[in-house]
Figure (cartoon, rainbow, N blue to C red):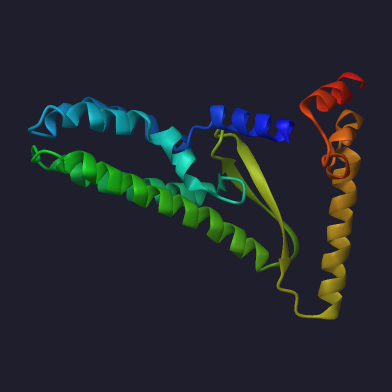
Length: 208
């Protein structure tokens, strides 16, 4: 359990947020941060809005709350980014707003962005599972913006022959994965995790 908590902490430290991985993110949000001073009549809105924009990526990862890995396809990332940039650009087209309006609108856009990312990730996984057998699709990891992929098993098989092929493909995938596991990590496989402590894990890795 201690090892798992450690890994969760490490993942959180590396998190950047899905939108952060888009090619126009830095340019767009640099503009938004530099022009926030002209968006509210009340000076108190400026630091609040600036903090929202600065923490946008990290806060996104904290709010996703996904039970599956935060990996998004490039196509869906483009769709989310386009929608978010359109909402932000429209907000910035207005003149100065009355106190409290601008940061509230930023929060609304932020929440809508989180929903869009959640839906995009889940929709891709559902589409994958509607296939028959093992299937992979290319993604970007929202944790560190590296190229990645998702592997799933689809249950949409229409004949016994398809099911036989699908199950055989699943068994081959499991066997291949097991053979690729480093001997140093075999001690960290599920059967050994029940009573594993951080010290045990360190000693396990040290011995290989």
